[in-house]
Image (cartoon, rainbow, N blue to C red):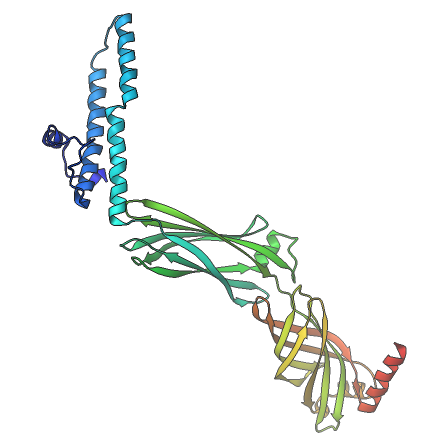
Length: 374
């Protein structure tokens, strides 16, 4: 503030001296301009007083007798007890500063982390958005200079960053600032070997909002929020059996019995899946289906999928199935699931599996045999 003062020490001191006591006067004009000018003037008086005192004491050493020196020391203590000129001026400047702040209504902004969203999550990364609600009580806009953020788990850094020039908060207004953060799972797993796929880890978000508030100057507002985030793992899939409703070399209608194993520490709510199946090196087709099923954490679920194919296109692979021999198969696709952390699209795949094609009666006999064994 002193850099913007228009008063000169020699002139202003002469003008004020004898007219107004800046320490005790009740007649000062308490307008904003007068307050700021008075504060600037007094700051310059302090600087002038200190420079004059230094020059007067450094011109030549003072030689006094021991007795007079002691008397001066006592007088100095007495003056100090009453409160020196500099201290009085400093107190007055502080009072002026409070009056300026009160007159204008400047105050510190407030903020709160209202929510943390996970708009996208898959096997490779998780995109997070931290919502911060900021309120500005001041009559003028205040710039949000920087946003400094850190996400850690059990005291270990997962990711950090800085967002410069984050915008401006309107006067007497409030705004929600979105802080996007991306967690790369490979980076986390390579850094911390004890974090396993399928697990849920705790996290803490730390955010420092750095403002530039008039009168108050630069101000840092720290925020924190805790939560949990998963490290997802793809389910295991197995084609256990193939049942056919109608078999011919031109067209066969069958049902694929799939076994899905959830290796995550959270439930999966199956909504849909897409897939393609190969017998040997020949694709028998695929589809996109809407399926509803709940796969509990570390649990197993079974799904039936209808399929139509032409056995005459498969060569020896289909004959091996008809004769009761196993044939190799490959299955690839994706499942759309709901989780406690939001929707996910997880891949499913199985290569090098072996299965058999069975007629309905044979399959019922097969199931009965299984029941007898139980």
